[in-house]
Image (cartoon, rainbow, N blue to C red; front, side, top):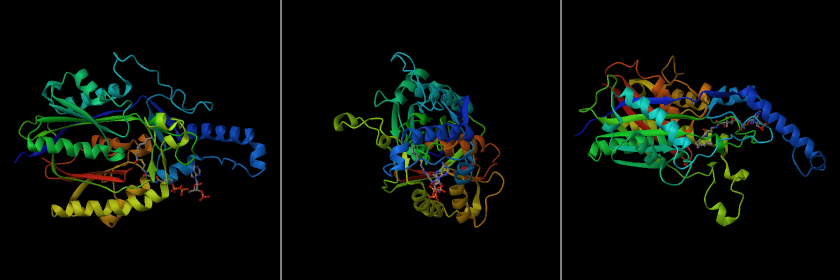
Length: 373
Ligand code: CO8
């Protein structure tokens, strides 16, 4: 039976970032403007005044201090509050493919491979900038990869679901080596006028090489011992942006079309389910939380990660046991746990176990149990 490994990982971090303070200053200016323009309706009780956002609240409630963004331009303009990203000619590399290529090249280098060694490309993320042709096929062409490429969307769990697909392909021999890319260009879908969610997301791209242990050429190999994914329908995290807007005559960029969530309910419902999922998954391999050296958790909220780690370990995680990257990256959808993996895996030694886990919209939960070879 083919033994499957992660042999390379790549991370592209945007050059620009926005701090909580900057974001809050823009939101508060917008709220003041809204309240001033609607003073009469607010006075008459027809409209609710918009309260201020606060950098202290954001850090305490989420652990986020800043976020990287593809571009700052437009986001902090109180009259726009949305990034400005110029359209590109169809002959030029698209924005999302470009950031995917940056991460992919780093992953290939890390795996000691050339693009020609890859047989399949999976772009797994929360949004693709168009329906077709697939961003994955564009990246495939750009890198000169011969084989198959496709996009798959599974919100925050796209990262682990994509890795599961790659694992299964290598395991059953439909591809020798698979490149899984998570180009998360999510800031265009953030509602920067929503106090509840304006601070949550950042842009990034990650990439991972999955292959057979027999062909692997890198020094840092992580065997994928097991994969597990599960989904439970919930409307508590939703984004209705769709080609259907044209047929329903709704505003395609209206508030309901952007990311929205019932954050507290998500927190309450998902955390125990994630703990149960992880417990069951480890149980299948007769492993316990005490056997794990590292937890590469999804990066949505520091309090969620502490909750899950505490339930599993019976204590707070210490040192780099469950690394947090969301303080500087914020929530980067499918890429979060993979940023944590990218930055915190080379120190593990032979025989160490780690668990990579995502959770989010759908609801969707995915995990991979890894062993350093
Ligand atoms: N500033 C100041 N006060 C605020 C703010 C703010 N910005 N926002 C809310 N408040 C106030 C509220 O009004 C409330 O006041 P009161 O008590 O007087 O009613 C108080 O603060 C507490 O509000 P909440 O209960 O809402 O605050 P929480 O402690 O629950 O924190 C969080 C809010 C941080 C959103 C938290 O609930 C959370 O992180 N939940 C988990 C959410 C999560 O993990 N979601 C996953 C979504 S991501 C995903 O699946 C991928 C989607 C694809 C990517 C999309 C890209 C665009």
